[in-house]
Image (cartoon, rainbow, N blue to C red; front, top):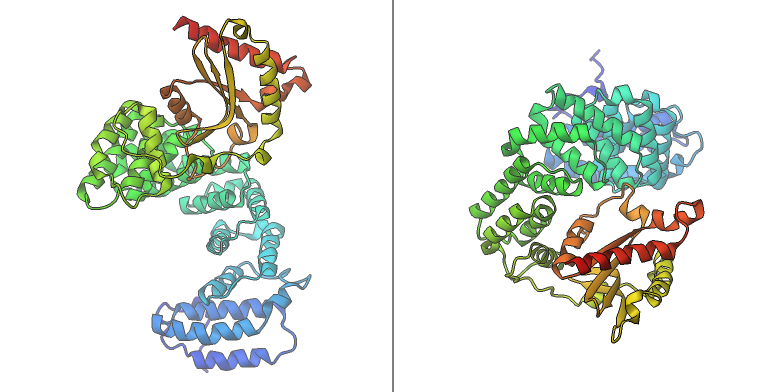
Length: 488
């Protein structure tokens, strides 16, 4: 009697696999009226294991023949059963999902829901490796359910010792899941950062510095910063910048800017890598790369930004640039005070202006209060004086909330309404965002404006007794700007 082959432990060169034999087995499987859940899981997982052993040529045939037959099984109907997956073994489930992806089949919503429930209900049985394998599959399927982020955050909190023994790639996978789901859980991020920091401190991650840099990039996109991890990473990056890929270099520079991590030595090394790459391939259009780097350097170190931008002028192409790239370059040139400005904004600024329908309650209250304050402003009584207020004016691609101009004293004032959810809580930083508050304030200053930032938390604190009068708050801020103007 020949030895029985374990389908879950096939050799890499499983060339003896016969797709036709599997067709017959699948046909027998199709004739059954009832499909026990465990049988389905095991069977599809077995198919996937055999699939891995095929040559590329045979994979295409297998994908067409077996994939179509699995599709005809209508497994989605079985996923809807209330008791389905309750007794599924964790060992086979990742391969079950991987089979769908490998065979080009779309994951049914019922299967996705059951997967999330399985992670939640049997969290203690999942190893980080198995769970990250499933998360990776869901990630490639563009699954970004908030409930998935909540479930993974709970898993991280409940399994902190296990998480701290994970690999850095697994930490990345957890971070990506939280980020893509839109669910921010401070405790979960802190556990991930602590695990990463311990790896770096113990020198276990010295050969994986790029993976740690990518983890920091994920943190930056969630606007999460852990001081100890950042310090350990900066130290490691300064020693091994040369091993990073060019993409990781540019994204790491951006993460430093987003998280306000100022280390001149590291910033210079990252900038030198970018400058060297521009020199090696002068025929390429590096405009977007230069725009991103200049944006970051303007926030991190103005002197370095000016040097970089002037040195990179020759690598900037006038054609084939994105609207966003031109806008970034335009803004950095203005913010840095570089006189040469070859980057006109190619689109109508009116396209970015806000519609009245988008006005929120905070801005509406400020608008009404501002009218009252300006009406009683002492400078209004001066002979020949004039005060104008414009809302949603576009200044170098930045749509500002309010612009106040006063003839005497000559004053141009910008009032920005900074809502707490957007400006002060760990918000996700969009890669396509025009710029952050620091860069915008530099632009405003370069154009001769004074700037007042109104924090919505401070503004609405009147109800809790922190301030007595919103008019007084706004009046004090404007009066301070006027006093500073007179001193100049």
